[in-house]
Length: 369
Image 1 (cartoon, rainbow, N blue to C red):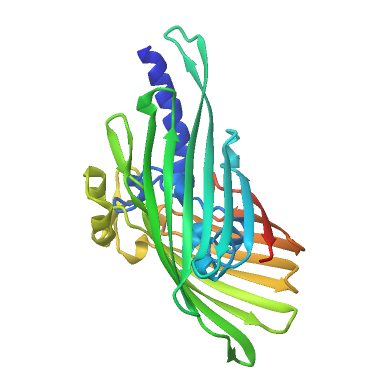
Image 2 (cartoon, helix red, strand yellow):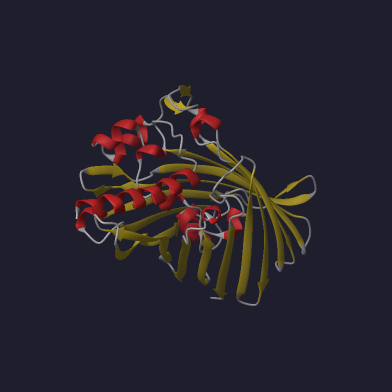
């Protein structure tokens, strides 16, 4: 029985290790996500923002705002339902896939409510006894179910929050299961349209602290969630009634520190995770990361023609000593009547990245108020 469990544990953590690597955490800084569990909560869900270099905190103008910035719901009045699918880590050919389901509903005088479900299938793991005979397979997955709310404080300012329940299942026994809850707090500001070089322009800026909450505990290990700060800005240029262009820029930093794994509450980590950190350069060698080097950066552009057809591109960068993710994004979108279809493609600039050639597909249905 012990050998069976050892076999499972080795296989399961191999899969999770691949996930960590794909998130740029294989060579983590001590103040970064290497100290966290529930890393699926950091996967960018929708194809639209994924096609714009993983930017969205200041755009946040559809149902997927629940991931990027729940405050974006405050400016939305139409009912929406959306779903995203992606075969995860296609380079491993391990049968992993990712699903994200969202829905919103506006209540006059109260605000806009939303619900979201995140599911990451970690595949099947085969169990064997001490003589190597197969004992069947066990499925592993991560799941989060939550609600969101956005409220318009003024004509230009919105605030929002999310609350989600998180469940992780690595095996059939209680030692391979864990659950907890977490929440987000966010804000979003949009200017009135103004003239910039003869072009009608709107500026927006937003911030979101995500995944504040408890810890996931497997056996004796009890690790914090991947709490992070995302902030950014966006400019939208409306050239005429048919043509518009949005330029967005996001910055993201983990708010998990080394001490957080040993029991520090999340609200203390928000402030204590801003020091220097140790990043791994080569095996056995370390390098000091400044606070600036602990940030990731994404920049993206989206062009719309007559609110019918969109083209997108973006660039994402992470310091080489802090995960070393660097890639280009490309995407497109179609809108017709109540239906929206989006897709994105990820082209990695680093060699042998497990994220290479990742495709995401999203459907969004919008029903007029």
